[in-house]
Length: 229
Image (cartoon, rainbow, N blue to C red; front, side, top):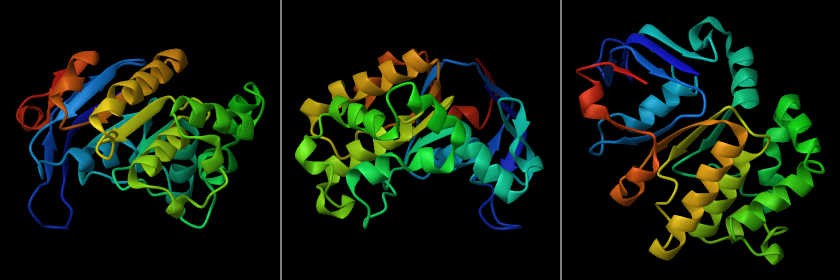
């Protein structure tokens, strides 16, 4: 699913390296808990896995496709087809309704749209995910910016899971949730990944979640030694 050849990434040309990694391999369906201190590059690594960022040296590949060999438009299309991202800042479109935000992946990806047809269509699929996230139906037609932070986080998770993407990237997916909600929320995400055979990479500072994952990667450790999964 994911292959990283020895790579270097820096935010500015000629600036200090943000990430220097050896070889990393991650198989389809595996789940990874990625942890490390603030500022060590966890979110940057997710950006590299999603093809939003490109390394200055080395290679990051998804499903055998080197992100750097794709022009920007095809890179965006490939990402839309194969990657669901739960952003730390959610990245919802504030002027759209909850349902319209969740169905966005199906507007950008025919592949994910087709998969949603098997579940009754994009809107029905979106409603099913929102129900599983515990978001009341009376909120579904509201603008996204009318929701609480915790509610927005659940909407962002539902959007990422639409159409069963092969790779799910979650950046602090429980950060805005009460402790009582975190376990059930992660249950939904983990089960969704299992059902779809998706690979899940989750960045979190919540050590209670770590035991649920197949692998635990400490980013400071990865900077000095490659990992093979």
